[in-house]
Length: 473
Image (cartoon, rainbow, N blue to C red; front, side, top):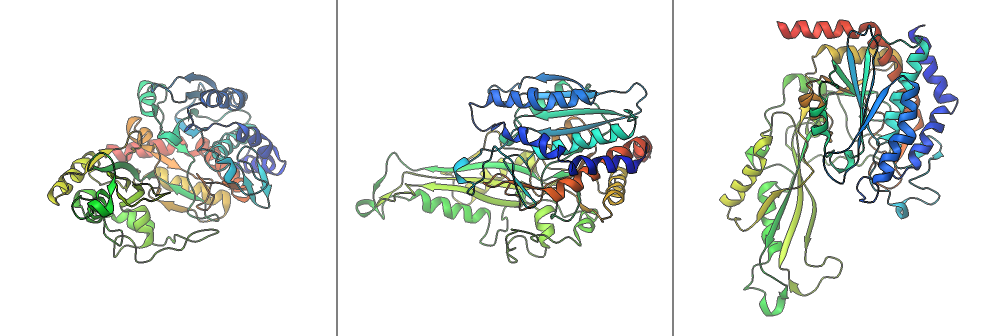
């Protein structure tokens, strides 16, 4: 019964092929939450793959229907020990993005794991089936080394709708908040900073998606007969967008910009390099907020992106002035932004610049709040120490992920300190054809997570008391 035995168990679990064998049937389930006809598959993922696994670990469970009609269910589970002094909550999502089956490279399928050297291809290998499978397996390895006793309770939320914006998650966690009460949250999603760097992040940027639309009239009109006397919605809309964000990606509306980056966040980002590693795109050095480093722009600042635009018929252009123009935009934002008033800021800005004819509306089911645990929280130094001890590497600390996760549900609705340990990497083709998990990361992650779960037994209660003491003063 030792920490090293738990880590050895994790290594053996990977080397024996057990992890690969456990993940393969999970990838085979077409749990595409964006497809309306996949509700049965979403349910089957829980009943066929997760519940038998966690029952062996001593969990009791309940499947909860989504309060939002038409979306996948939730699995709530708990493993309780009578003498436990604290609880940890963990999380995963078993739904995946669309497979895009016909777009994968020759010989690859989104619904079958295919190993090519270090890459394990398949939809969900990286996001998120592989990641929560690693965590549950690491817990199994710790229980094996500890004689079946942890000294703390483990609670689990596994949702089947994260890829559609986590509908119902906040409502379910609020309804069951007493049952889900814990002292710390440890979960895995998203990428490491790079493939070689074990990473800890403490929250995520928020996501505010909005639509801009100008409906000038019904029907298109010949550009030769009417050009010069009918306003062009596409011209109007593109000019309006240029007042929101300039040609170098700098946000022009003060109400959409964040507060200055806190010193603790700047320190955490000071030495980080972004845009390195396999398949990473080249960083555009002149893009984004001036006088900030690339790491500060990505993890410490807000960005406004135009994700899609349409006017006329792009696939078969005609000599006609289009009747309308549309753009789907997104603001990724950090803690310290005026997130409750983004829509009002946009409406006021457009009106002040003479674009009252352009409609602006928040996109349905695409909003997540920004969250960030204080980098100086005692749980942070504990996690970093454990990760370094297990991997013999200095882990990377990200104050928050550049992308968005439903972390506000855990940080705000449930009021937990949140620690995220990702098991993917930026070039994993997440949400695209040829998604893959790196076997080398999976192997290291199993060991790393086994160390974290073991160290919770020895130190978790003390960290919880230290944190409570800091708050009381």
